[in-house]
Image 1 (cartoon, one colour):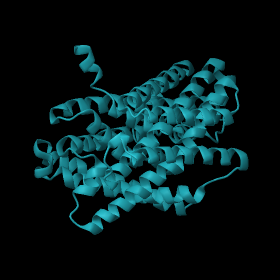
Image 2 (cartoon, one colour):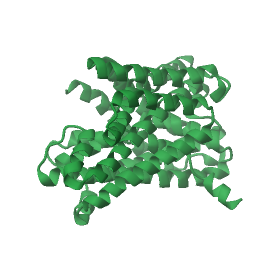
Image 3 (cartoon, one colour):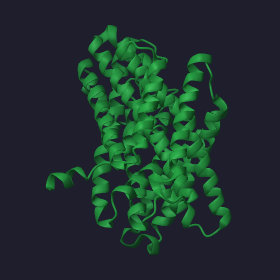
Image 4 (cartoon, helix red, strand yellow):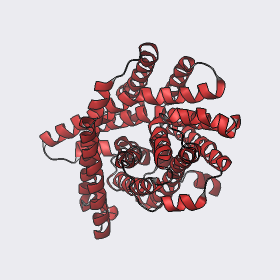
Length: 406
């Protein structure tokens, strides 16, 4: 019985880790290591701590108020106008945003398997999409949770074993934890933080906590789950930075994409290293290909007030629509070099708004004693929450500004 309880202590945090370690994160980490060596590891440490704090806030919201973030955005505002604005922001940023990026997740996973098997990515695009549809169609949260935990551990084994093989300089890694901003590094610093602190994870985690735990007495388990899973996610991201630093920065080789890192490891460290990196890249794409549609469905269901949870037609329609959109765009990209730039830009602008708005709303509800009961915020939590809001507001603003700097 003790063993069963121990297993039940983990899950929602691993969904968050699986979500933020996608192809975009692998690429950002690879570029950071290739261009600046170990110097930007501090950004991942900062992003990991910020994510743990922010996701703890969503966990407390769910346990204290018995609402996930999507439901809270619909139920708690008094003004109909405010409710409407929250609904539009959430649906545009989370649902359309997830759909816009789903193709990148599917393609990323297919490239990883192509590297391992030499089978064309066009076949893997279909297979990954079908796997995602099959798992989510089972309508079982525990199945999704277990599969994503498996993918996180596959990433851990793949990227950390690769790290051991390349034999990095430990002193340089320690120095990289100390903040520094080499010339022209700000963009990558913000990219590393931005791919870790992800808006849709606020909705995904709060819904997963509500699904898994019912009592406020389980908040210790929420914290333990987040500390383990998000820390592991941060270590995985850092291992990619370090691998890239050894393979490229220290050898003076340029890098243009994350998948190129895996391809270049073969002549440097052998085919086994390429196999490990390819499996890790597949796991990163597959995990995000599952969590993006799942988060979109949870957010839409909560904001629009659909009844029935996983069994509702709306819930199924959203996640299926996100996967199919990703599948179609993936083949359009492969066949016609199609780039859905306008959709992605729209999603980025919406994300830039929703991250600070959702964070401010979180802090507002967490201070409502009537809604939160024993889990209401104290002064220390308000100060920490206020700092987090400033950080994510800056990230959100930057996410919009950078679109016009390209």
